[in-house]
Image (cartoon, rainbow, N blue to C red; front, side, top):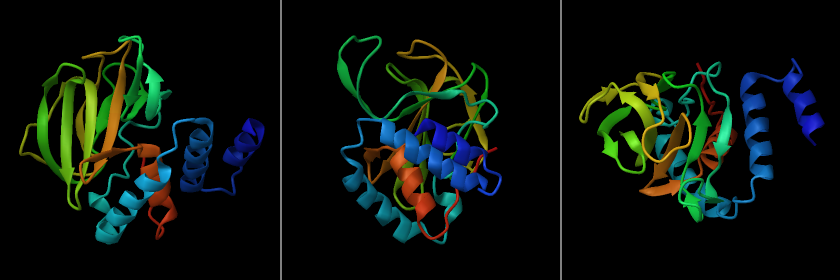
Length: 201
């Protein structure tokens, strides 16, 4: 399976968004914590219906530059917590990059929090039209303030290792109607619907 996916990704006839969809689908197949996909897809469908003509408000911009992104170290779902040493639900994905690499807003919105929180460390929460929110945590530092308008792809902070972490990475969450959903499910569903595309630097 890995060899097949590798061949498809290297195929020049497949565009970047198709490659991203293949990668996301493959990662989801390997992840045992996708039992809530159907319920989460229903929430995404609601956002698609509301936001189909306002893609700049839809969290489709990958929050780390593709050249800085190393891998996903922790997926959404239950896992053995490396610091608390017990099974806990992980409500986002951890995108590994070196400390100091730029973090970008996934969509247009308003910053509602830019603060320090014990587990998350330095974090930013952005509200997007349509009821979606995105969270960016463990930042080295934030360069935005609550109440500030931000644009899709705007630099908002830098990757760090604050809060409960074992190394530098960006903890990224997508909330729809205040429910934290799997970002991979969100991206896959959005990329499959009405020609929406994921954007990367």
